[in-house]
Image (tube, rainbow, N blue to C red; front, side):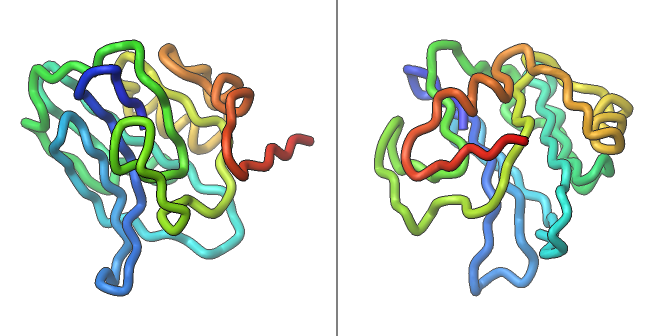
Length: 158
């Protein structure tokens, strides 16, 4: 999650409960959200997930393993996520910087998490998904995330 010091938030979460027959990937920006039905594979394989959003026209798109799995437009057109916030990965927060509940924590493995300040093209996303070569994000990138962990996170590297 990217949270500004003000009220803007970008939040990406998997929603899986006994009420859902299909898991949902949700992105929350400035208090509104969009969902895509994205299956969580329990196949012990890595999967590439990407969500794009353009503040100019509100276009958004969800990708899984380089394939578009949902898209739309008019999502927070003209919205702006200001700098100076905190990124939280793998934990829902009920308030900025707090309200953490251990039952809402991500359990699994993550790698090469990046945030860009521009929308990546579908071909860039497909290339990253197929080669596992993830370029460094222009806003946040993996080494920043893994070097600033808190809580019960375990960093495993080859």
